[in-house]
Image (cartoon, rainbow, N blue to C red; front, side, top):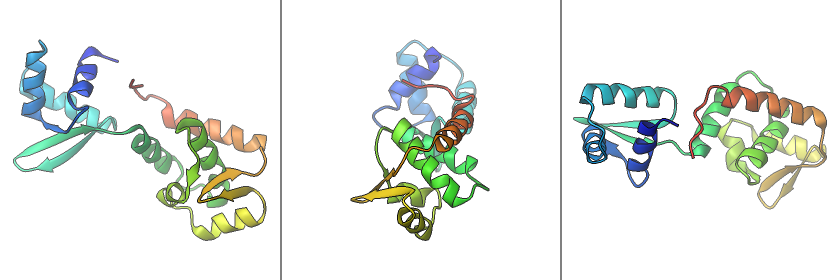
Length: 162
């Protein structure tokens, strides 16, 4: 991670800030660049999905995107055209693997998987419902291969933040 990106991440860690607020903090830390250059850099980070930009006229406020938000936005863009029955077991694997938690009904709704599909896969023993969360009933190697292919697409070209 570039040192400027690291500094901006630290500045935005506690709360969102405007361009002038970020600029002031960076100057305190020894980074003195023109505001237009900083604006371009922040917009590039927004375009890459690393920062969120909120317009509050006359200024724009920036805040970091959470790992979970980034995960689901990438997954949503990649899941277009994939049948919900095929996507569901893969989603469960990806949430388990990358977010280190069980997949919930909220996760399924977030990527547009209908409740009827969930019911159908629970009834056919592909997935199990466990108190509002979902797990695979059995480990099918095909689901793991698809999950790894999607994960490769999701995270290709991304900046890893610590």
